[in-house]
Length: 180
Ligand SMILES: [Zn+2]
Ligand SMILES: [Zn+2]
Image (cartoon, rainbow, N blue to C red; front, side):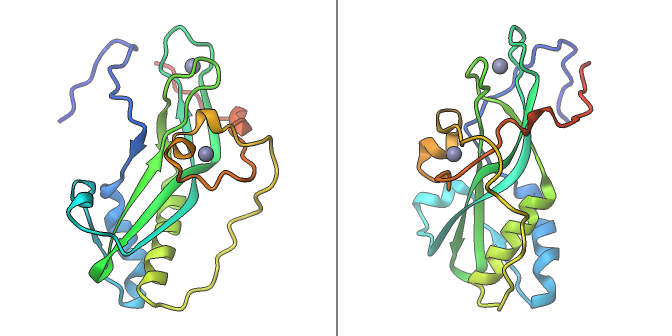
């Protein structure tokens, strides 16, 4: 499938927005006990199909800076912006917003915390499907330095719940840095 490049310099296609249709199966598993059978709606269809619902929240992830001349390696965020859209017949999609490196301002390369994504999306899909769901406890927000709006593509796009706080810099958590 994907060709491996030997050089450390990546030819990443830097994206301000990520989607994860490959996690759809996990979302389905998370809601099947409630008899909800969601289907993924491609973003390309956005213009053609009006969504009925839209909800912004946060997921977790880590980002790498792939700029070879930048000293900043990676950082983590518990407030990665995500917007979930609901369509008819339990259709949905979700867009996750990239963040920029605070040292060089280049877009990062996201490694999504998949469980947080599946949890949030499944919760929202159930809610929209009319299932009574308890508000899960996502741990407490509110700790950490102010959200860095300039570095957040979600803020730029107007979808980030950033009013509050972020910890773009809980960064130095031990990421088991994988330098090749
Ligand atoms: Zn950088
Ligand atoms: Zn933001």
